[in-house]
Length: 188
Image: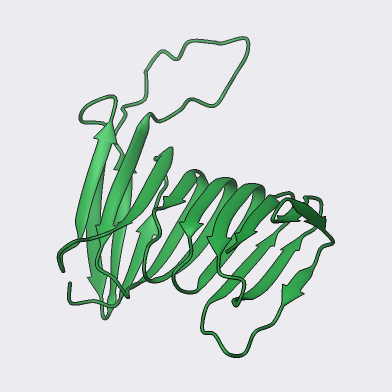
């Protein structure tokens, strides 16, 4: 992969999974319950490759009135396999983000959803309004965690927000900023 930064726009998806690629190639797998409802769009600007998912559901001409209006699930998820040491930016509204111990920098900007980071290998910056964040990181890492109305748990022990832990000898940094999110961190 020739670019160093990857931007993923997740509108129209329910879940996204980020994995380490075994080769130096980018792989995008779209798992859609309804075939032909999503398109994958690629756009390269300088050193940034943007991947977007476009929803292709035609609107009904005679929409049916529903007494209880609920948000429909898109029933689509994407698995993106990225080479190591790339910078990934993920943008979305309501989505689940799962990083399978990706060996690169990750920035996540979502409104709602669950962020599962598994083992953090590099720098992570997550900003969300509401949801849950789960992560494992070494105890020698720098932590900067803030939630206004949520709770912060470090190894199962409740901490006050904002929680900060400085370590100048490491390059790993976990930054989480939220309004209503619960943050669960396991230190190894």
